[in-house]
Each structure stands twice: as C-alpha cells, then as structure tokens.
Image (cartoon, rainbow, N blue to C red; front, side):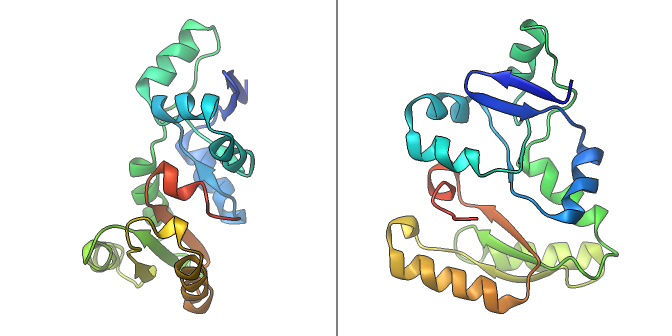
Length: 171
C-alpha cells in the first residue's frame, strides 16, 4: 500500500530512500506527528497547508503504531530531523542542489550552515535566515524573506520554524 489514511490525512507509505530519490524532482514535504494530527482536525488553515504538500510522511512512532493497529502499517518513520541530514548527504555531490535554511534563533542557522558545509565538503547550504518571532503575521517581513530566498540562487528551501508558522508559507 502506497498511502495510509489516518483521520483526515493521507500519509505516503514510502521509505526514506524512495523519498530522497523522488525529491530530485522537487516537492514540498510535511512530516506529521500526533500534534499535527490533532491540529489538522481543528485548524482549517493548517489543514489547507497540508493539502499543498507533495509528500506527507510519518514523523511519529505513535502514528506508526496507530497505523499498524488499523491494519495498514507504515513502512518507516521519516522525521524532519532525520530527513534533512539524509537529504544533504544523499545530494552532497549534486551541484544542482543548493539549500536555503529558514529557521533557528540568532546565529544557529549560520552555525548549521558552517557545520553542514564542512561535513559535506562543499557549500550545499548557500544562505540562511532566522526570522523574528511572529514573522508569519508580518506581511512586510514575509515579503522580505521571499525576496531573500529568491535572490539566493537556492534550489531547495528547508524550513525549520514549527508547524504554526510554516502553515503560512505559500508554495
């Protein structure tokens, strides 16, 4: 089975390796956990954001157990924290992959950029930006962030700002 229906979410039942191969051609990835599943039942904006995802993969052992209990076991847990390092390692030698990091507080993004680029052996992370708290409610700041991303030359946008903020990102 390639999809698993849990509540009002269809989770792609694929492995990390399958997902990494597919991402060569692009796509937005959402990684639902139990908190997301609850928010998806009550928050229409959050639900609408999920409808724009190209891939929805399981980010929770609890969700995996629930799917198994329902008779449609999910093959693999693919959390965002596992996906990102696997992604940049998988594409370390692909010069077409250039990542913009959006998220973190203060210098965290720059530290991550330095550490990842050192580990990979090239500048795969080409830019980073740490938005202010509540940026998603500030249209001017959001537009400025979009301009930064567009000017960067990145081919991949990695967002690490939390579920409530990320729902306002327009794909």
